[in-house]
Every structure is written in C-alpha cells, then in structure tokens.
Length: 247
Length: 314
Image (cartoon, rainbow over the protein chains, first blue to last red):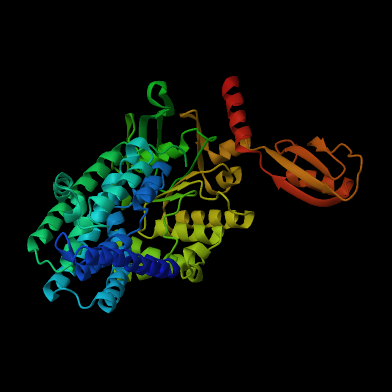
C-alpha cells in the first residue's frame, strides 16, 4: 500500500484515466441503450453506466502490465533475490500486489460512484451496492492470482509478453470488462460463464448494475481459491526448474 | 563445518529446440568452510561463481552432488535456510525502490517474523554500525550507489544471519565506497562471527577481506589456499601509472619494468617480491617529473593466469 502512495503521480493519473474511460464508455452504452428503447440485454441505461464504473475500477486498480513485469523478473533473474526469503515467493508477491491495488481500488470506487451518481443518479440498490464492494475486492484477488498463473509461463519460455497480450483480451471480452456477457452470442456467453475471467470484471459489474445474486460471490470465492492454488502450484514447479545464469 | 560441498555439478541448456546444447556451469566442485571464515570465491566471468552461490542458497538445484549449509540441504529446505543466511547480489536489489530503506526493512522484518521491538533494535544497531541511520530514512531511488549498498547490506543482515553470501558486492562502487564496504564486512565478521563467502573481480576485495581463497574456472576449483599464501606467491605484481608534467626520457628504475611510455604517461610493472613498492615509488618521484601517480592491482585474469602457470609447473 505504501508503494502505491509513494507513487502519487501515477496514482493520480490512473484515477483520472479511470474517470475519463468510465465517462466515455458509460455514455456510449447509455446512448446505445436509449437507442434500443431503454435497455440492452436486460440492463437499463443507468445500470450500464454503473456496470462500466465497477468493471473499470476492478481492472484499472491493478498494475496493468503485471504479467509482463512478473515475466521480466523471472526471465531476467530478479526473482532469485525474492527466493531468498523464508516465505512463499508467490504469496508475498500476490499480497504485495493486493496491497498496491487497494488504495487505487478505494479511490476509483469512490470517485466512480460519485461521478455515476452525478451523471445517471443513485445506485440501483443498496444491497447490490454493498455486494459490489465485496465483489470488487474478490475480483482484484482473482485477477492477481490469475495473472501470476499466466506469468509463470516465463519459467518455461522465458517471455510472458504473449501471455499478457492474450490475458488482456480474455478479460476484455470474456471477462465482461467492456460489455456485459449477456450481450455476447449464446455459445460464447456459455464459455464466458464457465471461465474465471467473469470473476474479474463481470460479477462486480453485475452487482453494481443492481442485481442481487449471492451465488455470484460464491463463484468468485471458488475461482479465487482455485486460481491461488494453480498459481502456487505452477510457481512451485517453475522455481524448481529456474535457470538463472550469471550474477 | 558451516558449509560442505561435495562434487556439485550444474549444467544449463542453451539455444533453441534441436540446436539445444548443455553448458557445464559448475563441474564436480568440492570444498568446505568453517564458521567465522572469510572466504573469497573468485574466478573470471562465466567461471561458475554465481551459479555455485545460487545452489548454496537454494535458488538453483544441482544436477548432481551434495551440499550442506548450516546442516541444511539448500535446495530442499530453501525457506528454512533463508532464516539463517543473508545474501547480497551486487547487481540485484532486495529493497523496494518506491520506499525508504526503513519501510523496506519493515516489510522484510514482517517476512522474517521479527517483532517491532526486535526490528527497531536491529535497525538502530545496523544504522550505527554502517553509519547509515539518516540514509535509512531516504527513498531508495534517491540514494547513491554507495549509500544503497550500505542499505542492501543492512537488509541482508537484518535477521542476524550466520553466513553472508556476497556476490560482487563492490561492483560499481568508487574507491572510497569499496574501502568502506570492505571495512564493514570485516567488522561484521569480527564482531559477530558471521561467516563470509565473497565473490569479486576486484583483487583488492580479496586481499582486504578474505583470509582464504578458492579460485574457480570453467566450473572447477583450481586453487584453494590462505590469502597470505596466495599473496606471497601470486599477488606480487603491482602496476604503477605515472602522469608526467612534461615529455622526458624515462631512465631505468630498478625493480620496475617500463611497459608503456607516451609524452604524458609512463606505465610500470613492479614485482614486489624483488623490490618494495615504496622503494620503486621513491625512485620514480626522484627521477621523473611526476604530475600524478597511481598504483593498481593486476586484473583478476592475470592472477588466474598465474595460477594456471603455477599449476602447469607443478
């Protein structure tokens, strides 16, 4: 957390960037919903704005190049110094990233809520708003764990940039970052529901749009546990085959 | 024994797919280190020094052989060992650049399960020992290299390790910084009995800090003896570089061989086993219009070349 607060400039810029994206994308969706008679796939114009505010907060709060950064640390050997600590390397990294994301998430959530309230009115429901906060924290956890699992490919191929590129697209489309997955065609929607990426954007967005579906929180918790286990396992295997040549 | 190594080997595969080849980084090395020793583990680039250290700290798994560090097999119980050793890689940082060193120490203190009181006491001690109390409060990204290395040393000493692995710790430091760092390492060893395993390309690091030297080349140990013995037999050459005030004909200086001479510079090689460096410098000052004078050690490659020559003779 202290690391994020120490980088005040980047912190302010990313919050400004977040508000700009929510204003533009949210307004586009509002206009699209108004053009379609007020709703798209069951979401009203105001709900869509709140949806985008939540999904963007869930993704913008994280280091957007996390996979690339982890991959560089693995292939460049910087990870070696971290292996000299008496704790799980990946657990410390994930805890550190979660701590870094929290101030951004708090600020984006508050700023996004104020802006959405001003532009489209009060949140669709108080219970769903409270669930959004929980879902956002879980979304960050799922995202960090998944990015570590993807980045661990660098232990084998020494370059995680391709994994980073693929991951971004998956969260963007199948995670519901840009649009609710209900808008996707049938088979793609089914695939999206079965994959973990919905836990990283769609679920907090769904709550922010006013839907009270506690099972979605359970789904997030399930994915969080699974993704943590996968990341820990892949890192443990990767650490055993680490090749760091030279100083 | 604090460290025991038996026929440790490690290879890396390089190249792609069908052209993949195995490079032997470390080949059947064996040695042991007693508690409180200051061991210089040296060799040219690519000799296998860092790979050895990474195996002894548990980062890398060897292909064959055995090692015990404080009674622990490093690569099977890395985290357990990490509580008892400290490691400083001169080319890597263990501090967080966005934070001050003190904030980094708090994070490391939590990682090593230190209480607030333990941490505060330890940081106070280290601040005094390293003369770095004020430096600890500065953001790491604003520190000079010398200041950062003092903070790095504090970071790896925080949990009171029994062994310090120092991998090229003086790289990039200026002369004063290097000397200060060497003095600190010796103090840590003498006051706390910390075992030191040091790698360096700087002959002066080895002469100043170590009491024993192991030379490794092409993955194998080629020399293992006391520094005093090595100094008497191998560190007998110094280079003297003289800046000249004006062009002169350089006269013969007893005990010094003129190897290069231009209008502004004269370079000599001195065999100190034949004439002391002090006598040679006195003679140079007497016979030449000296504007500037420096004495440097031979590069490590030359020392290792001398070891090879000695081995060939034996």
